[in-house]
Amino acid sequence: MLFLLLLLNVFGLTAQETSKEFQDILSKEYGNREESPLTEEDFKVFTGLDFYPINEKFIV
Image (cartoon, rainbow, N blue to C red; front, side, top):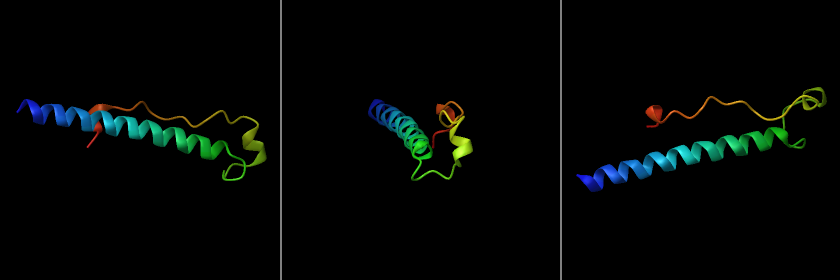
């Protein structure tokens, strides 16, 4: 039983870390003028994408 709880905890941390990595990658892609759908006007104020905080209760 303890092993199962530890295993679920590891998967939860991995999912949260993966979500954060995805957010970072997406923000970098939007910040890259060659890949971004943003216009030159958008780049004047773009500092990165805003995300809601990761809530572990909703990690499946």
